[in-house]
Image (tube, rainbow, N blue to C red; front, side, top):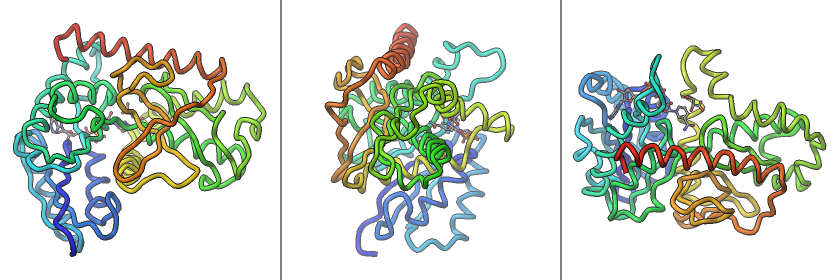
Amino acid sequence: MTQAPVNVTVTGAAGQIGYALLFRIASGQLLGPDTPVKLRLLEIPQAVKAAEGTAMELEDGAFPLLAGTDIFDNPKQAFEGANVALLVGARPRTKGMERGDLLEANGGIFKPQGEAINAGAADDIKVLVVGNPANTNALIAQQHAPDVPAERFTAMTRLDHNRALAQLAKKLGVSVADIKKMTIWGNHSATQYPDVFHAEVAGKNAAEAVNDETWLAEDFIPTVAKRGAAIIEARGASSAASAASAAIDHVHTWVNGTAEGDWTSMAVPSDGSYGVPEGLISSFPVTTKNGKYEIVQGLELNEFSRTRIDASVAELSEERDAVRSLGLI
Ligand code: NAD
Ligand code: LMR
């Protein structure tokens, strides 16, 4: 090993995404084949034993890049020195729970985690929130970490991006690798807008290649936006390995850069681009280079896109208002 290990804190480490995620981090797929990692796992006290079992399995994987695994039930300790934080653990919606209850329960998780990141994370900390409602949970954590640059808090829409690539590739009979410049706009929820109008398939415009607005409106968009619910229906549990895979992709792209002539989708704090109110953590097309991302500028949005982006952004504004009125930010 040529460099000091990078500290990667993972919350909800004993959950189903955690189980799919940790082994891929340990194998080097998060940061690259030359970067050793040290895992710092955060769980609630009742799940620490299960996390210890996973840590035993990580040890048994004999991963050359894994420099150690520590387990905590205290956020302050878990985020101490963290360079990358994957906030996966969240309170799932249970029967009879209203949206306000869900936001409040998650406020109880993401507020102290934001404070802990503020208090002890490394200067180069990068945060990805996976736990739902991901965009607003990221906002809560960010608002409690005033000393960390706001743009370091991001939420995951890469799973939606990957789902959109897969659906479009299937429709056009091409490989996902032939598709560039896919975009997810807005919230990681059923209001999200997967946009193919700027996407390219083997160098041609994807919307022109599809040439079927009815398919876009009635098939593609709802299939991508409601895929999470369809997986829950089929599997009896929410997506786990695909979500873990998307989390790996998100951080890998953030750290290692987007390919020339392509971009990705990340939910990031808006700077007002495309009329998205400043500060909302909303999904945009972004390019990344040298560990930094930039929102792609200058895309023309047609009426079809504008209406759908506005609807998803309105939902994000409502969520922000709700957590404000609960005193969570
Ligand atoms: P899970 O219930 O299997 O695991 C969640 C884990 O988080 C549990 O082990 C739990 O003990 C832990 N946890 C709860 N509160 C915690 C806290 N305060 N600190 C640390 N750990 C805590 O759930 P999962 O299937 O792994 O999913 C995790 C989250 O990811 C859910 O909110 C799910 O909705 C979300 N998700 C997001 C996406 C996305 O694309 N953004 C995709 C799939 C799932
Ligand atoms: C997904 O997109 O698969 C998840 O966010 C679904 C969910 O509600 O957990």
